[in-house]
Image: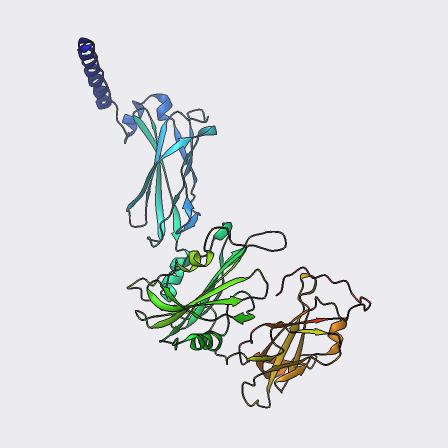
Length: 454
């Protein structure tokens, strides 16, 4: 074929080049280990200094978070040097190689490695990082360490035996806001909100668990489990529970319950199921406000839940799980009932929880959410009814009056002589009624009502 002789000649030339390179490699040490060897290196290579800028010995990174390495390389005169190749190696606390990655040079002799994630369910402790900079056939190295700590999910797994990822929808920085009980009976709440004008994007997830198989035989049994056994349901006051619908969660038969929060934009769901592998009944609640479009935010948050086999949990939360009676069942006025003026008193009524002792009272709280605040009024009564004081209509309000009831025990008095109370029951559902002044009556206050409460 034409050109064959030229190819043969090129191959001969390449053989000589390869032989010369191999001879050069044998003559030059790759990693000098003694002062004598170092003295034989070119002065520029001998004098390179590699400084590990990040991580430092004080750096701690949680599993699941991102990590990177930054070094600076200087020449013999202390000037930045960016002409070499660099890579990092990271070993965990057991000496296992976890990462090998190149570093890219930048300004001022600074080399950076692309970030990577510290794996979940890995080994905690002090990890070692080694950064090596190659200049021709010579190498200089910097070594340091950083601390890898368990993530919130790992902590929950070890304490309570389940795994769930904190919600991060829309860039939310989640945190643990409630933790009660122990590995047998308890609750945790995770989530947060993003800064925004007026209405904040929010994402919350709550896990509650009770030892044993609860009665989940039908919709009413599920309702009673949520209200009576759990009692405290999440991040927004709950106005009403929708019908429980059969729902399969990760292959387990269960129930899905949509709930109505205080505000129109609160989107609340709960999934309830029994897990025979650990003999516990679980309820996972998710609350979202302004979630990202095109996704099922509830599924994204709750589907990270796992019950890994072989985990022996024995954790105790910072707070005990309250042992309280169910919240009173509100009777009237019906949720969202409307009233105009003072033609007749508005009577709040609820089913009595028990025959009250001498030191027991019902505490009724009325709030108006006026001007994005929450002016509230509290009243105590020993009967399961209360007439709403007429003067409240003439105080600043939005026409929406929220109310709930709980049973309290009098345990003493405070300095001004008012009773000191402790809860004996959970709060009831968070009902509201509409109450406005008659048309064409003089305005007594400016109606500042920005919140969609119903």
